[in-house]
Length: 207
Image (cartoon, rainbow, N blue to C red; front, side, top):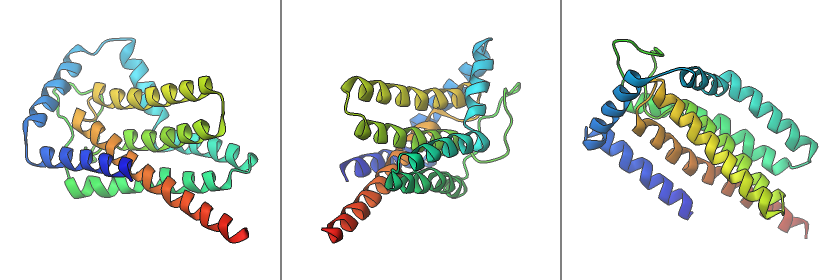
């Protein structure tokens, strides 16, 4: 609940600031144009690759691979959490885009051109939901602290890398990816809490 409330508050504050055209929107434009003016190889190609890995098709592959692993491990409640968190988060993101209807960054020489809305970032949402659930599962399933720490560091790094790629390529503003991370953490907290509650109640009935 604490995580849900904190993440929800961060999203709310970012959304209000963006819609109210507050100072963060000025920073958004400055950062976006700086990256567009200073893009260079091979970083640009790397960011294209990271971004491509986390499109709908890329996330579908990651989702299926993790789902297959959870099925083989008989971690059915985690599989249910995965089924709700990642697709649900992506659908929620589309709905939020249409609620806020923020235009994407505009450049004279863009690296990417997209017709959809900008706030919040869909790639970052999907990555946060997926890697967040992956980290939660491995932290609980693996007793070794070295594995737990490495898992958290790797998953957080992947989320940040995806978020950075979207800002670097000019597909999103900084506030878009920050809001996506905050909103996704809140959604993930809801999904994991709901599935955990379901598991505990079913286990209590069998006692």
